[in-house]
Amino acid sequence: MPGLALYENETMAAHCSFHIGGPVRAMAVPQDVSSLTRISYLLKKQELAPFILGNGTNILFPDEGLKDLFIISTGKLTNMFLLPDGAIYAEAGISLSKLSSFAQQNGLTGLEFASGIPGSVGGGLVMNAGAYGGELRDAVESVVIYFLPEQALYELTNEQCAFSYRKSLFQTMPGCVILSAVFRLEKGEPEAIAEKMRDFNQRRREKQPLDLPSAGSAFKRPEGGYAAALIDGAGLKGCTVGGAQVSEKHAGFVVNIGGATSHDVYELMMRVRRTVYEHSKVVLEPEMILLPPDYKLEDHGPQVPLHSVWGAGPEEKS
Ligand SMILES: Cc1cc2nc3c(=O)[nH]c(=O)nc-3n(C[C@H](O)[C@H](O)[C@H](O)COP(=O)(O)OP(=O)(O)OC[C@H]3O[C@@H](n4cnc5c(N)ncnc54)[C@H](O)[C@@H]3O)c2cc1C
Image (cartoon, rainbow, N blue to C red; front, side):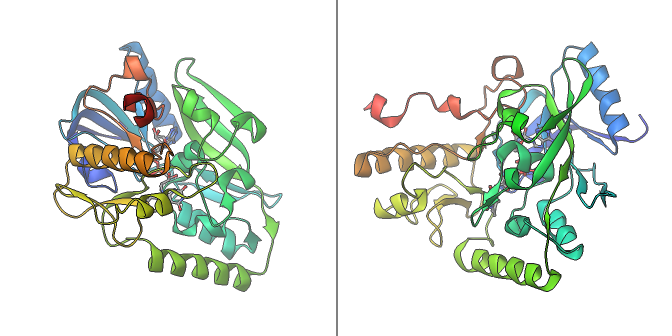
């Protein structure tokens, strides 16, 4: 099919920042929106619901692979330009760092926080990505989605996206592919914007284990506290299962120190969750999306974050 690359039995370790994960049935990488809609149409005819992948920086794929899973990557949807009214149009595959730099180059402030987040616009909107007091919901005006069950395009306003801390409508809307978004920002002084971006990136380099594969923060910030502080307080910094480790640099990150399996990561995260609960009676919820080996599109939906696969919290189990 023109405008579409198709890979069979693709190993997902090569497509995610954790460098973990076995093969999936197939991965389609459309080069533009029309190729995406054509492959979606063909999949729908075969009653196959695809899983949508952005930059793979917030996902843990199982080592066993997912032999029935069909993935559509939005990584090649990379148009971005300034609209006549000064807003930014960006497609789903644009990296958040590129979006942030583009805003800076055009003297627009409000996306500095995003410059060091390794995700894409699509994945960033699904997760309402944020850092240093900013979140994408503060900057996005509207989002265009392709809704697979109806094979139809919709434009959603910011309010309709129902953003909250690391949440959005898209997490509860199976079959929705984010195609593009419009970001409306304030005018700012380019050098001051660049300085803020440098400062944020410097802080990241100092505090985060950027030299090791990970999926970013392993757990969400619990109400009234910080996951990293609770994990550190429970004496878990450096705790290791196989090749997975609670980062010695930043306790909020689980890193792959070499050859980690998805089972190592699960076991470590469960241990962290249990120990933190015993220590401080706080139940940590994962921030990354965990696809278990028995993941089934028909049971779980194509892109709903599967925090539910963890079942009951540690307090209910003990
Ligand atoms: C070193 C490091 C640092 C990080 N720092 C931060 C941080 O400061 N703040 C923060 O919020 N996050 C951070 N993250 C996590 C991650 O970068 C963000 O969650 C990011 O928004 C995920 O984007 P992605 O494109 O990689 O999405 P993916 O991981 O590919 O996917 C995430 C979810 O979005 C869905 N999805 C992706 N693209 C689309 C689309 N086009 N349409 C519909 N659904 C889609 C997927 O199905 C999945 O459910 C960090 C990660 C790493 C590795």
